[in-house]
Image (cartoon, rainbow, N blue to C red; front, top):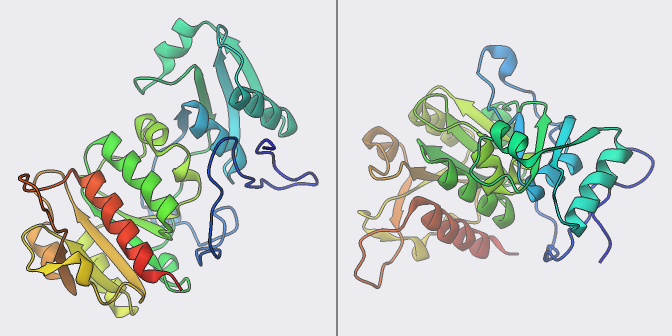
Length: 290
């Protein structure tokens, strides 16, 4: 399979990766690409998302393919040859990004995730987009995260969301993990392709989305309605997930149009939030087919 290289003649492309499954089905509707897309909300005082240090092989390759500017790449000097490393070096050469080989101990001292896989990049920080821009795409499929605190959970949710066809992410300004190196590594490049809005408060954001014709669906194991019976999945929809442990905040739950639970057939009373996100996102994706 050919390597993931941007098309010659300018611009970062998105060819399929070695060994990865090609996308199937019709292309999904979504926001314009992040480099020419919705207006950033940073100009209005909203803090950035982070994401300026990217660690892990897949995450760094996606950063080179995505719209952000990659400033420098560090590689551990003792890395064994691998096709993905060839891709990283070739993409960096084509984009004139500096690549430095350093001692593994030096690289790991600079890393902020547990296993950077001998690859680290400094990248222009992610900038949030406006909530209005996320709601204005054709048939939006949004994911609202009401206070996720664990970086691995957030990274896993973002990776699933991108794969399932989510068109945008909504994060609260406070009481939520930012896009740390651990998040970018776990997300395996999903942060490059998912527009994200940062809002002062989730309940108010849900009111704004409803005013724009977006159905708001909360996921809560105490709900009476089953997620399998969701009737609004084919409409513009925002799926709301609560924080680890406490779930949806009361005011957030009150702002939802529908609150539904995943059916559990075993003895356990709940799923990890990233696992629940995966099931719910793919159920909505299944219902939206065609």
